Image (cartoon, rainbow, N blue to C red; front, side, top):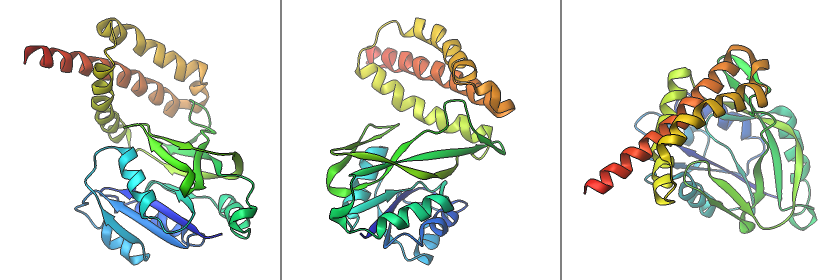
Amino acid sequence: MKLSVMIITLNEEDRLEDALKSCRDIADEIVVVDSYSTDKTIEIAKKYGAQIFKKKFVDYSSQKNFAKDKATYPWILNLDADERVSETLKQEILKVKQQNHEEIDADGFLVKRKTSYLGRWIKHSGWYPDRKLRLFRKDKSQWRGRIHEGLILEGKTAKMEGDILHFTYRDITDHINRLNRYAKMQAEDIVEKKKKLLFLRAILLPPVTFIRFYLWKMGILDGFPGFIIALVSSWATAMKYLKAIEIKRERNDE
């Protein structure tokens, strides 16, 4: 079978090349959908022969559905610019590629994602094995959700060996800034869904979030990075409800 690799980008000049290097041996086509980067992202994508399309960012689902529709081949591997295909995963995908499209006994494959954070591979904290549906049939899939988008697949899934290596936040500041951006979209969803007791949620849920990540998800075993993951996640929980309160007040004043 033939495979399209799709990547969405925005100012990823420092990470995109490693992602492209990791998948070029398995890709029959690379599709890059860019949100009008102002750095060398496009130049790097062209260097690896990618098919490049530009689309203003609205949300993650619309961006990825657009990329999926631009893909030529019936099977797609979705990769983020901060991710790499491990050697084990590459060999597994090459085995699947040797089969005819009709012979593959699955419509999508779940792949483990292993994340590097603050110089350490995170093995707990709810971040591993973090299986994601990443290799799938184009005609049976659709993304839904604005922020933490999910791929909806009509059909059978199977598990695949090997990891996607995730080099996520560049540092703690990058982590906080990104979650702050997510918090605004999450706050808008909270207001749209008319959730109640927002102030009480902003007080009670952050410590629950910290306990969940640090103790229940065993983040304590990830050392200092595990503590930071729990702490920043707790902060992000507070922020989305505080922003929701702010949005609600602004709308009531209009």
